[in-house]
Image 1: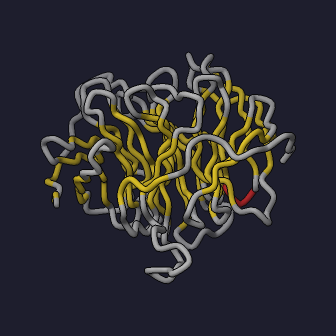
Image 2: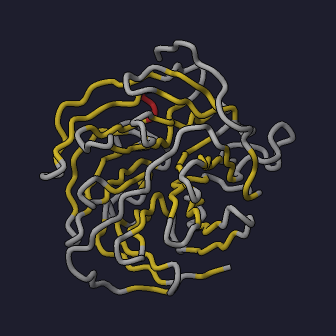
Length: 312
């Protein structure tokens, strides 16, 4: 990674929710609820957190869940183990709408986000992280699924520039964040090129977000940090995180100036004396502001057999 005048930035990182998530992931701010939603993937848990009070409601989906995003109708689109579905955290229901890779129980869905036209993109990975087993899919509001990239290992963080012409994408073991030309009208991917590289000695690039200035913020798994990259891919700042495995980031809060950071305990001793807050949710105010997440657009009312979720 190109580095120039990289510096510590923002306010100190503080804990919002103390937890021991196996793989905390997928943070997303819902401005309608004024809540941060985030996941514990393998446990199949959705956290609904009030950052102002620290009150944390937990919903059990019943299967691993890799990503969620708000929808225009107030529900959420979800990438769960079995495929894409619709999550209603108020009613406590989950509907599987489109199966993905059900013929391969060794894979699960991972990170995802909504594109500028209101479609949901999420990828898959093998549980044993074997090379080439993952893919990247697009889920449209009419319930259709399109496979766009194959041969991936850990399909991970993604987001778009403000103009919608570039999608940033991470396949973690490549040690890169790639920039992919994007046709928002067609929902099509074009030329893919390296945007920034993360040195292997630091850790693996994981979840990311793009702020209001089109700067990229990426969590570094194993690196105890979040990197701040300018639009050229140059590292201009670094946030220290009190947990070795930061997994994803999202801006939120009333002014979109809070950066939330999920972390993980996967592979660690729990509790780990060197990082007792591993698996917790953190926040800081790094200076820049983020953008509201794009909302998924249902083209037609989803029709599927739902099942109740368990809420704690």
